[in-house]
Length: 461
Image (cartoon, rainbow, N blue to C red):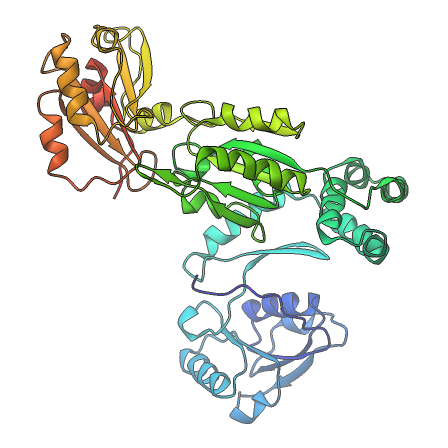
């Protein structure tokens, strides 16, 4: 990140604004809302600045800026239309380690003003690092539309009971669950409806009924989709952000992991050919043990957990031990990768059915129902087939598929690293051998692949 976001307490802190025009007035208004003591230095004090009412009142110095004006200020803003003065202020402030902002000139700034969503005491800020203030303001508008003003009252209610909740619920993990349930439950809805007294009674009742000894653990079996983070479901995102532990495999991208709760424990259990971090049986036991310890566990699996994801095996173990769980479907790789490659899995002129198979079996061989897979007018999607690609193509040809049957290999589908390599059963193995292919990959076979060049819509740079 270009700028590290910080929230600074400026209450009763001396701040200097250089300039007396409309731009300076806007910065003065922001600083005054934070309770700063503001001094303004300007040769001309405009009407907007002169009319601003602050407590304490502004100190107005109608004069040309001089180096000694910096004094011991906590923060400096230069909002003049004189480039030389702005550059001079920036240099002087940096030499004295005073944070400085030069309006509309990020190269002269040591800090910048974000677009602010004020729901005090809840405050959110959006910044483009000075690259596009208009974009930051548009993002602020989107956030404003989904964060009601009553969030501030909800935060003040939580602040009022924070000490009591801490004394009643000693364990931090249980406290977190209490607050999450409160903020997503009836008390919050009452605040939004303007019924603050009733919301407070609901909070007290919830606190009195809280089991302070042990939280009930739960497992969320979540399909993380084919790779692109914005293909996650709303439910998947919500559960990821409340989970205490994230258990994930190698198909879960870093961008998706970044959406999980920041302080959640992360456990990698990825498996790839001949290299299993944990065998499946150990993963099953791990999920159960974490839940029995009171943890909320998000088990992230690439694609959909019930399509070649062994999700069924994991929830069997949980059911045997009476551990609560939820299953959140995800976009399976076949659907996601085919869509982003511009290859429809079914099409009335090409395929009336679609078959999903795995190209990597337990004994390491590709032993499939080749007669069925070689039948015409269908699409065959093969998961985990990269290593056995040559054997797959040869077997289909041997069982009656034409050598010129179109086939595609999709690498890291739906992401910015997506590549689509198309050919025929006779040519694709040699084409792929000449490329540096990186997992995960998906193989699509059938005449629908011929539509790729016409329907390709997702372009990567």
